[in-house]
Amino acid sequence: MNRLNKLFDSKKDNLLSIYFTAGYPALSTTVEIAEALEKAGVDFLEIGFPYSDPVADGPTIQHSSEVALENGMNLNRLFEELKDIRQRVSIPILLMGYVNPMVQYGVARFCKKAAEVGVDGVIVPDLPMYEYESLYSKDFKNNNLSNIFLVTPQTSEERIRKIDGLSDSFIYLLSSSSITGKNLEVSNSIEDYYKRVKSMQLKNPAIIGFGISNTDTFNKACEYARGAIVGSAFVKFLGSENYLERIPGFIQSIRP
Image (cartoon, rainbow, N blue to C red; front, side):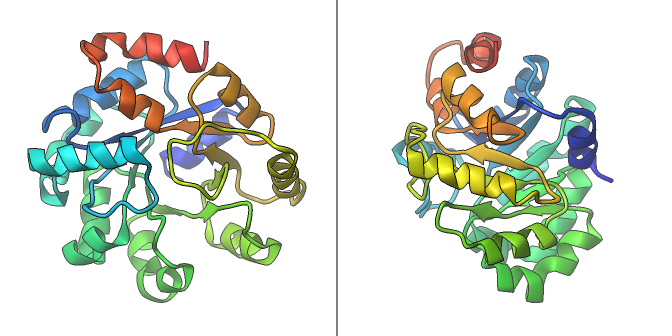
């Protein structure tokens, strides 16, 4: 049982996860941001590794990736920065990014290094499920890493149940099929989608992401899932002055 499983066993609702891009706004800020987020009460973290073609991301996260790459962030640098993170941060940590940098680095090597530095899971939106099953699942399992699958309003029940069977921590429920950074708008069709997934009584809990930016959107997401993920709103916040000392206030604006 890794840290993610322990978290979901011990806390049943209103879980808050924060995403930020490694290497943004400056190269060596990853660990201090993670530490500040834990102190502010965040339940788990998603650290993005930047990529030059982040097709699922909106302008805010795209910009953070561009800056991070210009700053010199890459997987080698990220793992070097994270090597002592478990001396300072105890909550679950996931890495999130695209499959191309992982393949270039070597997936088996990536999983081994992630486990060595204390990472609990990985989110790779463009990793096809069949490739994970046939090529990489052993690398994840051998290193006790959870692979987090994404579900959209268009995902069929058959595929959702397949994802549930392959998952061992939580399922990332996208609030829409759009890019990141769009505000959460719970239309009748989206509400039906949330209710449909909830009624399936999956063995893994769901966490909602995309469009969570304030208390209202966080609370709305928590009506249908165990918690929510804030990404673009926090990355945008990191572009402001004195962001480290203001992180507790930001978290309070999401979950008072």
